[in-house]
Length: 126
Image 1 (tube, helix red, strand yellow):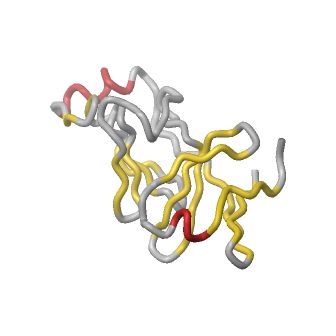
Image 2 (cartoon, rainbow, N blue to C red):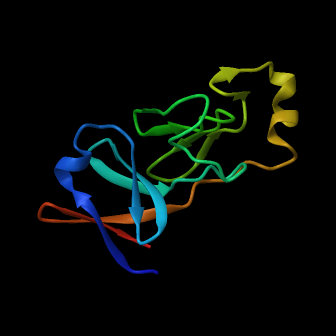
């Protein structure tokens, strides 16, 4: 399903944490990046694994989300990749091992979605 999907209210996301929500069957993450709410697909582009569940735990601060599987870092607002597969399960690995951890995949951005706030309601455009 595509279109505008309600994912919650502004108060649901005001704590500055990253929240996994279902948007008509699509798992997305919503969080504050600066003063704006931002949303992205809840899948790391490296292997398609969850950004909110994994051995490295949920890591989100200052608008950046880190994959709990291979430590790839992303800007939530733009989806830009900031660091590609530098480790495993929350632990950094030696620089020489990055190509092994990346499994031949090139750095890719997150899939981001437009967020619309109307009154107290938060919508995501899929």
